[in-house]
Every structure is written in structure tokens, then in C-alpha cells.
Amino acid sequence: MELPGLYTPQEVAEYLKVSRGTIYSLLSRKEIGSVKVGRSRRFTGKHIQQYLTSVGPRVIMVEEQVDIRRPRS
Image (cartoon, rainbow, N blue to C red; front, side):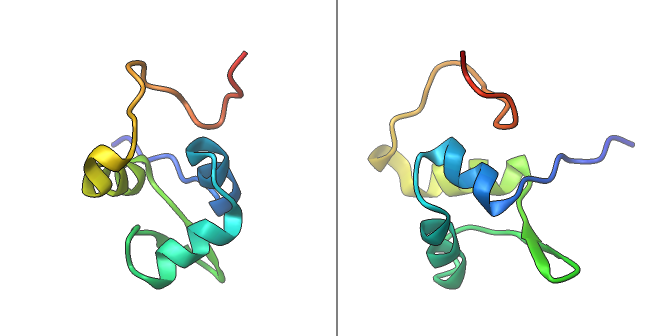
């Protein structure tokens, strides 16, 4: 069984090029899903993909799939 990668709010913010506060705002408005690990919030790739799908054409999708943990060179 393969476990999904978990990403921090900061990692998701960097990937989406928004602030960490924006990620928490999306959470409070229930626009993006997450899981709670202890007292922290974590996101799976599926949560991020569902959010991007839900916002539709407001977001420009890149053609390549990028691992958000690896900085782009």
C-alpha cells in the first residue's frame, strides 16, 4: 500500500505562489481539504488537485507535473 505524501501549509503556499495566510483562509472557507495530524494541518496531492479543479479557469495549469517539495531550477 502506497501512502500519500503529506504537505505543510507552507509547502502548498509556495507551490500555489500565495501566502500561508491565504491557505488558512481557503481552509476556513472550506475551499481546500486537509487532514489534521496532531494539532497541525496537512494536505495530500489529491486535496491540492481537487482545489485546482474546483477553481477552474481562474488558475493556469502548467503542462508538467511538479513535485512541490523540489524547488524548480
